[in-house]
Length: 416
Length: 137
Image (tube, rainbow over all chains, first blue to last red; front, side):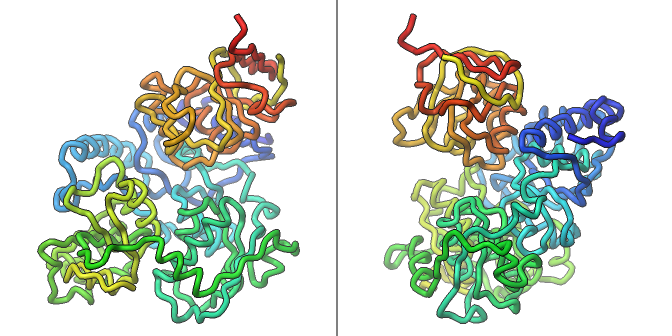
């Protein structure tokens, strides 16, 4: 691999042991996948769940991370600001929170922006087309490749942290044009995308990911008038049911002005039509028993935008969440602060809704309180993970945001 | 039997092989607390991977897999080496974070020729794997 003089200096300990460990790791890792050089990344977004000793080792004597870096949400619902009100078991939370206090000292030293969100693009980490990035989190990875046209690989947590520290990433995988083209084509037919709800978009994405697995996807039939929030709901389930890293939405993705460009002028290896039947069948994968009440509504996976919080606040004005119900909303630290300034956060909290900076789908280590048997959400990622992790003990249903809020107030479920 | 391959992370180790025929993941398919295989219904479910040499086609790696193997290593539950038919980024990251040898691209199909229980020597520095049948003395 070609190295600049500065990179060689980093690799020989000129900038301390942390920098040396990180760049040496990236060089060896990059060489395994044929990288010819390292490139400078514009930003990083890192996992917020490192074992302390590993984080200390990777950052030993590092004064400042070389990439502009934001942080991922709290995992396992252990946000110190909300876990008590959410009724999360105290003991594992205390342990996690103590560990977090130690991590924050390191983040402060490195100059990480503590966003605690999976949507860093909403809070100041805004990439441009062609930028090289390393962002942790499968749905943000898909978002930057597919919506922004920035370039990023499906980096694991340690590689990702090493890139944040050094500001350098191996030039391989999806950094290269030839690996970015679509391989499998999905054709949306027979419905008007402008009339689809977020949960409809989620169903389409969930269906696509299950078939595409880890192949590059192209989609036709989505209008470029579809709002960003809705595109987010189309994309994130594709990386839940599958491990897709790039999805060319023809007419929307910067690299996909037309189908031929998206496919690199090659014929798709497979063509799959998606109609209303596929959409409805996918929604039916998360059914609820007749007459069952909703115990908990979870929104914000991926984390809510300010517009979504505004919508939730408007729906909850002068209302209260049902006595036997709960409402959890995931969002970024900075959007929470802004929602407070605008008054929406107070409206939601007055109605007994809880806003958290946790990952709303990462329930395994600190389980959802025992009494919760049913969950309603507008997110297929939440439905997928909570169903799987609770081994079906918690039944999850899917509907658009308005119906979810209705269920949080009344406990009744009327279907989508 | 001697097999030649590409060394990605160097090292010399020897131990018992655990061979999986399907793509493997250090988060969902592996229990770091016990170091055992955690794929429900798998014929090797509960088999110890810790302290052994893992032989796999590739991985369907979750992006937190390296954290999982790092935690396993602290408990003495990480494998001592990994042999892949074709190494993927997440598995390479996993091997490197706990600094165990990892090799791929062999001149034989390792998943077919190595059996669980075989005694395997990884001579990473020379790009070589030596396999002794598990039933041999």
